[in-house]
Length: 249
Image (cartoon, rainbow, N blue to C red; front, side, top):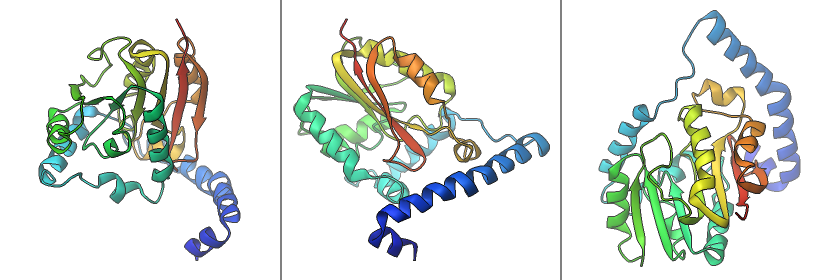
């Protein structure tokens, strides 16, 4: 029934979904969050890079003979408009020279930004780089940078035109996201852009252990270095994309 309404009456479907989340789901999750955290005293929110690094490493080891792990297809197709994300990457490859992907993991999106002349993949575990360099040996200039999981100090200043990230800043401490937002202004060249996915600020994300920052806070961290700051909310049910352009020095 749900899929039938979505297919035949898409506007009605999204309107009903909006009212459901606004009037039903959000109040319920808010009450549940308060009950579990303050009455049951359960630890709900403890994002950790170390906790998930081991999981990502094991996934790549199991899938080492595949062209990619299909992780995003398997887990997120229902929520994400992957085709629109891919089109954005393809269009930016015609506009900019270099791209930095934060949280490159298995190189799932490389085919979509393969036309960038320079590709820099980055993640918090070296197996990501080994996997990518093995599966994409034909690109003219592709490199991997091992991140420290705290900031972008390992990336040279003014070294990239476009920064992209998907599903990588969802379970890290708030301070890490804040550091990244500040560091974007250092590593992006003048007139460059960012297109970075972060969790939406809501109770559902909090219950699931996702990091979330208010849009006003993220904008304040970017505004000294970026202009045209906007948030694209309709590409992912639980996350939003920050889009911004670097101010000329």
